[in-house]
Image (cartoon, rainbow, N blue to C red; front, side, top):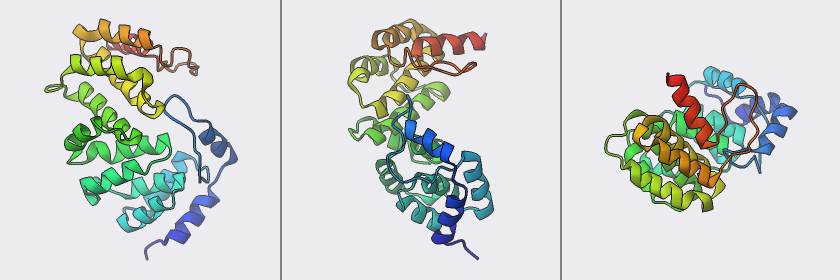
Length: 228
């Protein structure tokens, strides 16, 4: 028997954790915190619930429409990229309200969607912050995995001229692209580091011991060092 929306929301609510709610509200360099509905469920518990329910596109869409971020996390795990047309995926992206939901949607659905390159090109020219973020995230992935066909110097020019005034939602993904260019394109590394120094984005952002700073020059140098 299929799980109903009401039953699923009750299960999510039962898994709520005050500490997670507080952490979600903080936000960080990746984007703003939750400013809306949430139960505050640990990611591991959401994954566990998804395994029990299994793929369910109809329930996933109903969960997404609640606007509750925990329900949206679960919705993403109940969907498959093939369940969504490019238009439907674009609509989901534009309805995002929380950065980590954007990250999950990007990693679990967008990066695996058959139309991702077409969407990437469209989103890169879009003024909607969540669409632009998705476009830059896909561009960062291409830089790291298959940069052939990308004009990397032009991307650096755009990052240099636009990143400082960009919406913070978009800045994280632009900075990610900057770092990937610096890591994977040795001939452009010096310039990428210089752009990171110029903007100073996340220069003083505190990080836990053992974690790498999101400040692009530190990020680039550390990843290159690890490559040996």
